[in-house]
Image 1 (cartoon, rainbow, N blue to C red):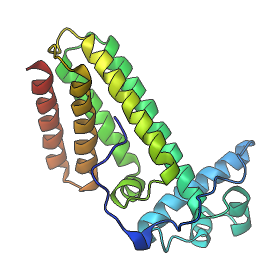
Image 2 (cartoon, rainbow, N blue to C red; image 1 turned 45 degrees about the vertical axis):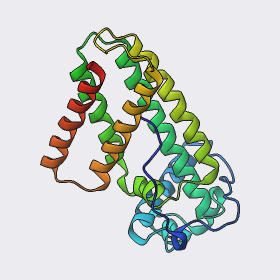
Image 3 (cartoon, helix red, strand yellow; image 1 turned 135 degrees about the horizontal axis):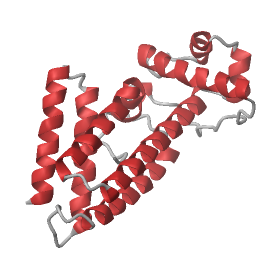
Image 4 (spheres, one colour; image 1 turned 90 degrees about the vertical axis):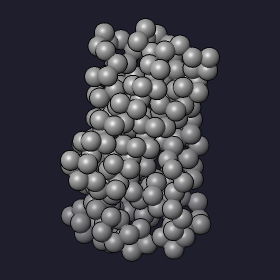
Length: 223
């Protein structure tokens, strides 16, 4: 539910170069342009996953996307800007999903256990959507520097919202420090759903892992 991760692995030879990461040159306004940009972004995910960031050239990305290199450069001056766009999209999708799940946690009359099952399941699905991108940004430490503060702010916002939602539920134990309780819930869900996907666990192991995580959270929140 947050975007904070376990300590990323440092891969200096596979990082974006030290120049400032530039933003896309222009925002697509026509539907055709939006389709082109999305094709470039999706192609970049596959190229970076297949070749690594260092060898994931704009030429390879353009070829996989089925566009000319000139068309790619109309929107992205370099692969750093493509990575930035991918990271922004990933963070926005994660935050939007988290807000929907928080609303469910706040308003549903369901018992806590099925609500937690739903939250954990959705977070696993989010990580499974683009595991290559997820690994690139967090395992290889390539989340652009200018977005790390954005991610940190989103994380703190989610912790505060989780604390507020938990305080409204009668089936969650009262505690002296609700913020700390929310902190552990947010990070436990994020860390373990991340690991279940990135470690490419077998389906049976992933299902058992999901149940273990839900049980752990339920015991923690209702102790």
